[in-house]
Length: 258
Image (cartoon, rainbow, N blue to C red; front, top):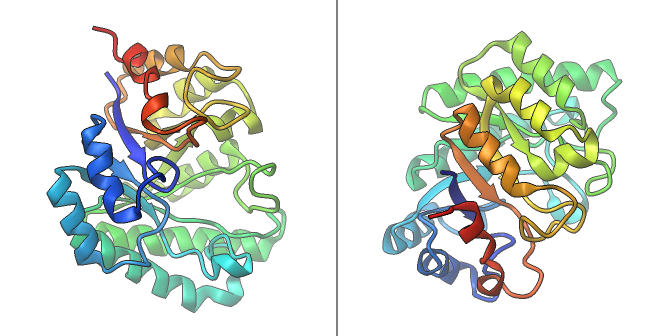
């Protein structure tokens, strides 16, 4: 049976951020994830998790200046120092909150440019080494160009190759079913081939990025396949509810048959 984590950056947005933790717990979630925690003190987030009795399982490293268009720093050689500082910031937050998975965003860069490729490899090795000292796993996630044009890491094969070359126990793949379908299709085969590298899974319908079961994929077959393949990690619900978060949660009953 999948262990679902509500993504509080997309779900329960009917509530103020501080109230989303309890709202998720009230709806039956015992785990949450979100994009970024940095607008709030780490201790306050830890308190919200504790009060709601939910585990915070994933957030992203600081992406740079998001409002100005930054989408991560790892592949940008000219911002190496800032990137390394961002790793420490994320690990500090993770230590207080109790988070054991951090997504390292690559940034907007040409994946064919050797300087960007070298910076990204160096950044992943640095982040994985630093995270290992804290018992944290660094995740890398290919993103599709429709949602994030110009993103450096836009290919699951290249992500797998990087992880194989690095061969670091604290560097893993974040397999987002929505992005996989848009980039390559062949979701079930991809899971079968890449599961040994996977440290976290996320789900949303394609193409609307709404509740599972509302798009072109048989999301419930995919979730069953994860069980059959032996995946025991979390499945992050990184989708935008189509008509209210709680109203759209009926899909979870189908995903968790009695």
